[in-house]
Length: 266
Image (cartoon, rainbow, N blue to C red; front, side, top):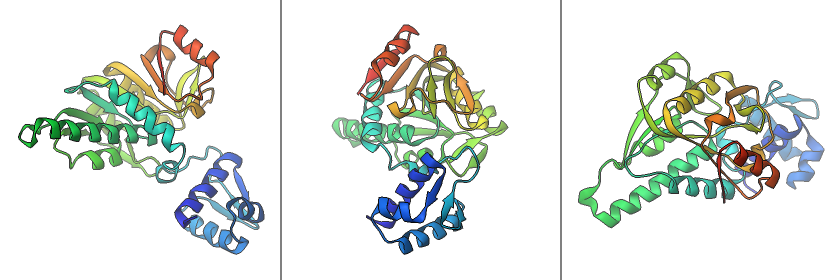
């Protein structure tokens, strides 16, 4: 196991339990306690956790893994979801993408399809096939170098955990655009409360994405179902399509369908 994989595992354990003990972590990751201590010291230097005697604790009550570490979790599910979302999008669409690991995979799926389409039609016909409006710096960075995409990036203040731009500057740009489809990644989905995320500033931007779009696609893996987070984005009435993996509970799928949401399971 590489250091990066080891760190991702330690942060996942910390996200679940809120604390880590050196000996237990060493047994779980199958390395020596001395290695775990060095790992925790380095992660503490990066402000990803707080070192304690004998282990570590999470920063704050509402702990959120930085995007670069979350990206290694449930990868196959997110890639299947992303491919299914890409199937629902049409060439020429103006698309809104908020930040997150699943929407990042959607951007990558679109990039592969756009490149394949350009190859089929010939390089001479290459030009913007999609307009992407995003507040996610990593998504903009991945797509900006590809001629098949026109990229519109909101302004705003960057959140280091998710690379998302938030605040009045981001809101100002979104108020000036009209979207065909908004694809949203979220942190929690509750049949009564709707869709949620951990931070109110991110929730506000995602809510605007939904309000500015003709169609809203919720792209999230089944681990988020039935979970709640701090800030509400919108109710289920604001969602048109849910794309998720086969881990979705059938009863919950039925509840979404009853709410008028098209459920796509991959």
